[in-house]
Length: 86
Image (cartoon, rainbow, N blue to C red; front, side, top):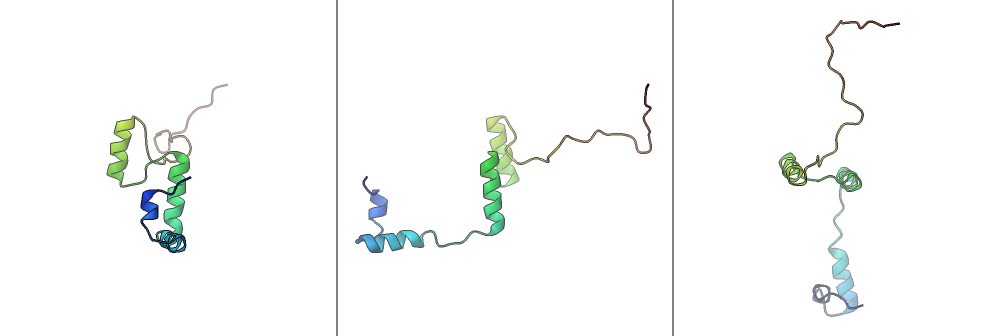
């Protein structure tokens, strides 16, 4: 294998180059951002603003954000009781 040209341009020696490469990834992600990234990756969802999510959904023809689990509730009148047929 041959190192990529951009990697080789990080520094002159292997040791210095490796240190420079590691510094690129020193930032720590918050637990919340890491959870959101994992959820979106595992669910095949888009991560971004609601507007961006809608734009991508329109392009691919499906929902691109995590929905609520379960079936939608049926709308019913408050206080109305159904009858049980035997």
